[in-house]
Image (cartoon, rainbow, N blue to C red; front, side):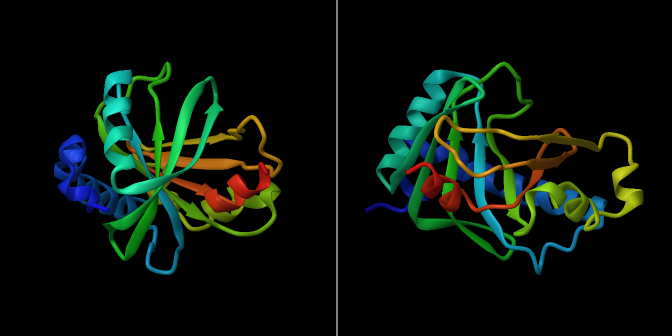
Length: 186
């Protein structure tokens, strides 16, 4: 099975990885977030066109296995487990989230967010995540915080999300890994 960085259909996201790494590190610094001790579960893409999502899916199928395909918030989302990980900071992401375009228009097509897992009571996720971020970082212009609770058709675990973005990249916090969520669907 090929390395994802050498697959023609994924050339644009291979080229986009240095931009994402730099933007993510910049956002973490602005937020006063020490990423070193944190476990991140997966990395996610964003695109504007169904054709791009289909092309990326074709490429990801050549270097990984489809873990799950669900409809979440009215659009398909595929999860792939790669043989060769996507490396960002100290993390080695083997799980890639590929959502089809939705109503929101993202400023960039490519890598968009990582998801950090904070195990514990889902009810306290937001408080635990916000405690990791500096008040000064959160108060900066252009920093936005959003809470949500995305839910797949068959998910049984409550999966609240706290997302922090600067409009270029996003850091999300969840109480469960994606593989735990997928297992709950069985």
